[in-house]
Image (cartoon, rainbow, N blue to C red; front, side):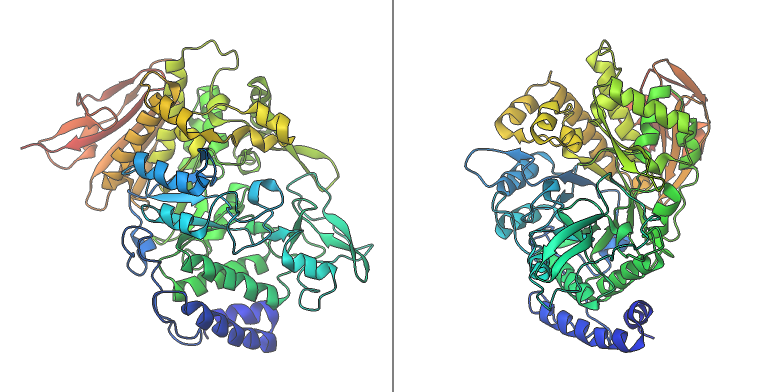
Length: 598
């Protein structure tokens, strides 16, 4: 049976499933007119639809995601994170990144750039427009002229100002079933709450007051995927993004997608079915496109979004990595991180992890539960507050609240709370944390503020009243350029070291997303990996997470099968003695590889 039809029948039953397939075929046919090559119906073998010419310098071949390489690295940024007077921010972003990031970054994730009403873009008022404050679709294309693009698909909910919800409020028959209306007395006690806002919000409609499902806020109205009309609209939207140059699509907050009273409404089988359906459509219509799931949940639940390794996400956000990295550097002990990293297995060569340390959001704590002890998580919370950071909470099933997210810039989160340590040590620690992330199996994502060593923006929190604003400062381009031209500035020193690591990583096949990774247990204060490429090229990655010098006993002869070799530290390009005892200074990073010389 056609995979897409199978998923539709599982979601909606035989009759509605078959009728929905016919409607999807029409959506595909309509979307094909905006793409470069014709597309046949979903009931037959669909042709590949390459992206808009110029989006990566050249259209990738079909199934390009299967050839993700060590050169793939993603910048995460808002469209207006860098701005200058009288220039659309997206145009500034395109020019700034083209000037500074060539060879280090090849993909840019522009956080929601659509018109919105709240939550810094995640309450989308129009899926198909660009916020006038940011620019136009032509400006998005300018970014895509030099980089691959990741778009956000914020498809769990829409803004209360969205035309669909406004139609619902008017009792427009097209939208009466687009949202989840919950009758008085319905049991929602088991529903998992990611925030402390009420789950249900009352709205006055043309036919009276209705209680509507709002997982994230009263301005973010959850869509009702039990209605196939919603699914049709969402698929049409995703195909529109692909036609506009999206090479990667991030499925935001996807774990909450399907609602079923009497359940947690989290990770439901129907949610996985919807993702499998989207994957099947993308596989047939646009096999170059990569689906990335964003699920800020415990690690075991998070990796379930790989499915069987062929039918759900291509990349899964590695949410446990940020809190475990903080814990390692705070404690000077990498053992918890080492134990967890040794479990990072992939169900197939078609998938990998999306590794990151910081993003526009805070540092999630739920992914570390079950890996770190509660006392260790409490210590992360206490240290965040000691550093001047903030802590967001979630509502539990029993009505209590618990820490959910650390709201702090990652540079501040790593530093000593007393602020007395030398800047060089702070930079070494910060760069070392990113070196660990870059060495792990997967594709790295770096938040723009991390790339330049930004500090927390408490003034922004005072302006918005939102904890997450602390890590969302808008940077004035001229000031940023001045800092990057000053070799003594914190921004330049961090930027130079991180972009060097990114370029080194891009040049070595051992860092390919699916290259073999072997986690080594050599010293409690060291995080150690050996990455090995398909042709046997190996890199030994060592990171001291402590403030004291450390040693490791390792036989570097394992890095190569040849007898004539020179060991080189890729981070500094310096020769390294072929000793069985390796010495690392506080927070030092070593990437040791064999350099073959005639």
